[in-house]
Amino acid sequence: MTTVIDAAEVVASGMNILFVTLDSLRYDTAETALRDGRTPRLAGLLPAGGWERRTTPGTFTLPAHMAFFSGFLPKRPQPNQPPRLWECRPPAFKTVTSGTFVFDAPNLLQGLGQHGYTTVCVGGVTYFSRETPLGSVLPDMFDQDYWEPRFCSPELDSTRHQVDRALQVADEHEGRPLLLFVNVSATHVPHGHYLGDSHDTALSQQAALAYADEHLGRLVTGLTSRDRWLVILCADHGDAYGEDGYHGRGIIHPTVTTVPFALMLC
Image 1 (cartoon, rainbow, N blue to C red):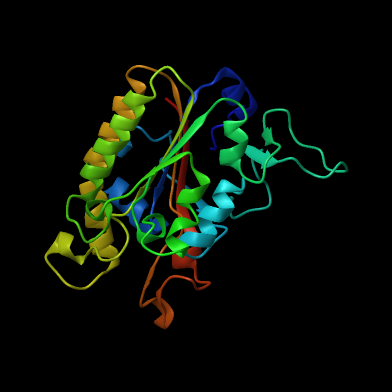
Image 2: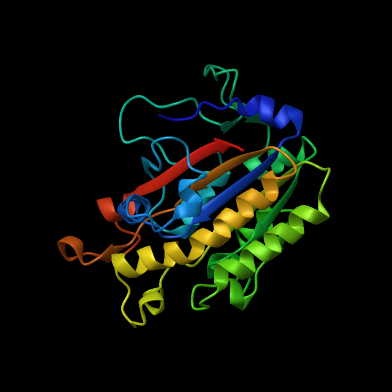
């Protein structure tokens, strides 16, 4: 069952927000790893019932995150939807639930800024790297952004480095409202190296998630040991590894469009 959060009250109170995207993580990968006991730290943090199955609004990193930062988080694959956490100010004819944070800005990050939040990005994949003009689009939306080559998926210990930076950022902003965003790259290709292989598969993605688990647990417990946080964990999209002849992302296939999602007050 989805946790119901009054996001309007969260923002009004200045509660910190942690938003983590596990890049390219398939729902079945996350669910299998949880069931098999390979992600014990996440198991201790996730709501009862574990990961929620949801459908992403984008099939690769850029459109998915543009949607997320515009207020469109992954949705349930069914007609009944929980109230949206946040939404850009709608046209006059549309009503919004009282628990939805309505921002009068082009995106959520600017909207939170109008309420005293600092927004910080700890990037992972190269869409957050500023190495190209396109790689600056998402970082430009934040007040501060961080990316280093060691944060990216070819680095075996990428999540440790990202979490170290994220915890440092939180320390630097202690006592002020913060939106801390982390794009975890370990679950993005290449991840075959977690099995000592050059091929990327659902099994090697599961191994990548098992690696990242310790550091994700360290991130959430490190942050919430001092303050209460709203925590969102989800994938931006999945990857196909040959199912029905499909490979990769940017395609409409259940392995790509079905993602894990979790929402918590910690």
